[in-house]
Length: 125
Image 1 (spheres, rainbow, N blue to C red):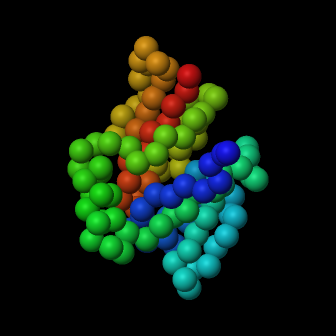
Image 2 (tube, rainbow, N blue to C red; image 1 turned 90 degrees about the vertical axis):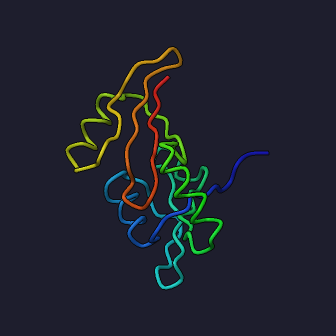
């Protein structure tokens, strides 16, 4: 068994799709903007796990998303092999980082905003 699809709530799937593809470099798996449906994947594993950019249309979804954001908790963690290069690339593209890369006992991590109501953590082992 493996994870085929996971999701994160976003304020606007169309805006999120543009950010995740044009800024983060994810690839399109399925995009139906008229239906608010967007699924992206890592270019490193194009046939791997899909990420559904799910509209936060229900009260529960909105409360969950805003609660995580307000608490400073990332909704998802993306692994990188070169934190310094990834951080510099994203900063150059205008990504807002809440936390620049820091080394911890477990590895190096950074925290940025996706502009769609979420905090995303980058992690390098």
